[in-house]
Length: 204
Ligand SMILES: N[C@@H](CCC(=O)N[C@@H](CS)C(=O)NCC(=O)O)C(=O)O
Image 1 (tube, protein in one colour):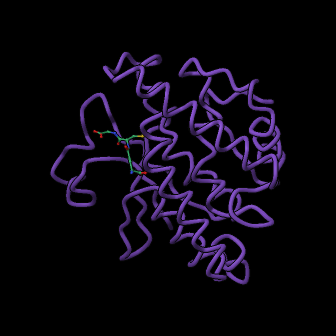
Image 2 (cartoon, rainbow, N blue to C red):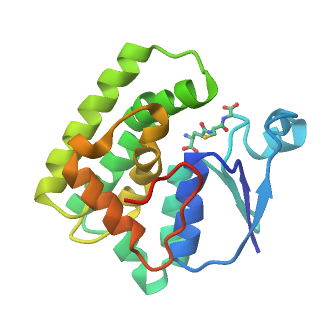
């Protein structure tokens, strides 16, 4: 059975939990003990030298990085839907990759950083994180005003990669109500069959 090494409060881990649930894939959740720094132990570093969650283990396949794990699950378990979650068509595929990169960059440096700061007191460059967040939400809102989903005419792993830290943004003192198309997109994702939530995500 697939094993997911995770932190309950991690939005990066939530991407993987969502994808596993939407694909109806059973898995074993292994909660990593952040308090004892289990994610920096030799055994854990052997799986992910960066000492981060999530890590997904599927037989001999050991994967770090939530974006990479979404790609793997789409291709390996999407079955006839593999092209649905991660399109083969070059332009749509490139759009997905652009959003996966945005998840790893602007989402991490923007809303994720603000949440780490306001929820757990992490020292960050506050003004920079606020500027990145505003630019990101403006771009997302504009995009979602013209298109219901991020990278194709239907949901893809791009939406899953971007969703958690946007839906968790209020924990970073970000008010989403000025971004109505983003709120509509969140509602749309929350109504999917197989959707799972996590503590800190508001229901819209
Ligand atoms: N690019 C990675 C980032 C993973 C990441 O930053 N994980 C955080 C939790 S959300 C973590 O493990 N932090 C502990 C640390 O870096 O020591 C991904 O998308 O999975």
